[in-house]
Length: 293
Image (cartoon, rainbow, N blue to C red; front, side, top):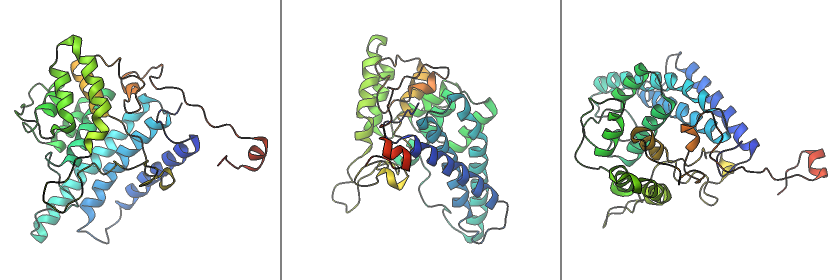
């Protein structure tokens, strides 16, 4: 059963196969000498992203939740390899960074990405050695009160920060975590409902800069990045799942919401997502392989 609100079975089958092939292709390429050693750290980190997208694609397509954790070892290997190469290249060329973007948690893109990986790791219950490797890669110990507390649910030694790096949308989630038990379900639903809209934040005042939003934000937008471009892998509020797993929040009011991946916490089913019916094709379309327009 397709879990994502967009895309038919053909779309999801194609995307999963595409990213499976991409992961294999990039893994094979890393075994050969690089034609551009300075770019190799970023190339390796891109492989980390391909593994993560494959996890999300398989979830969106309706794949078994129990199968998703198999991609974590490759993801961690690629990130660790990227870090080693980055240190070597930066040292050789006296560079501040050897990647394309900011890897600090103060960067909304990276914070969102790290929160997703923590949420997936918690909900999929990856082995402890993988969990510790992930934490070492994320770093940021003591920088963000919300992410630190989520991580501390499995690693109590985690130092807890005193500030929230990204008030929008995460202040709503922190409020749900800190609320009396009888209010948590309603406040968690409030966070999920506002999560996507509040991830798009206006640029700083008096600066000629675009709005701040995660890299995946427009994927699946019918005008800016329609399905035909193949970028869409779902829009899942994994941060909410992370909090539910970490603190035992009541997520009953979130089940069935288009952004809430409730099946991550219910690997044995039944699915929490509404059943979607594929558009029916007429006799002519079935005979000649044409889909309705």
